[in-house]
Image (cartoon, rainbow, N blue to C red; front, side, top):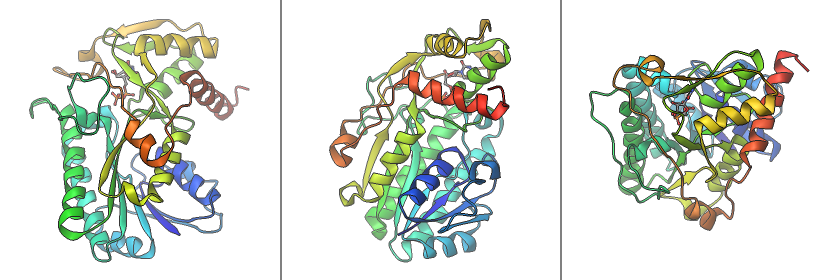
Length: 324
Ligand code: UDP
């Protein structure tokens, strides 16, 4: 089986490519290297069954050619990271919606399976705990850029289901919840790599807002396992799945745990949202997935404990910096 991964040089994409190659599958990737990097796939380029192209997911002829060469497409290419979304809303909306249209349009020609990556952000301001796949989406006003990301991904989901119902393109939608792990960059605002870098440098650890907001952090290895199984599960077609753990932690506690794990003397400082992002920024206060549906359909749910995840990320960051 050949799997085509858009955004395959990104954080999740490169881990997925490696896992699929290890499982004996062939992998093609397309990436424009905007947030992905060649360093993420440096160990893959010489492997049998691997090939890559640098280009945009909005390049229709290129995407069509690659979708045709594969049996399955995993569409991960997107503008991601809250910082990028707030700073470049036009780019976010255009990349996310147009890219998904192009991929689904190409897959429609031969009804090939497409796994569409979505996000827990689509639940928006909903206060439900946990979030179930059938819950309503509660987005903020269109004047706030932050919700443009959620809305663009929600539209991707609607497009996927529209292609499934109307054109019989088999689709599976995955809502990823705060996936973290070795190799994730903090450049686009993601909290775990940022805190680890700050702790290792002895710099202040920057908690935005009160730090009472919470998240559930899933190990990328588990995310990739879930996606790999979904590809092979016919009952998953036409369905949406939360992918994440339900181990919840506040951001303040996360900062403390990372400081302890690194043995750092960094001070933990609280920065108002208005300084961290922009005026009027609204954060999500809690975000816990229900993973019952995922487990029922694929017999697996992400379970790696947060402390193990932190150890992995810290170990990897230390290796990279040569700090021993
Ligand atoms: N955050 C923080 N300090 C940072 C980066 C992020 O306190 O240096 C907070 C952010 O405001 C949010 C949480 O950590 O409440 C998770 O942020 P991230 O951007 O990793 O993912 P999100 O869940 O917002 O998509």
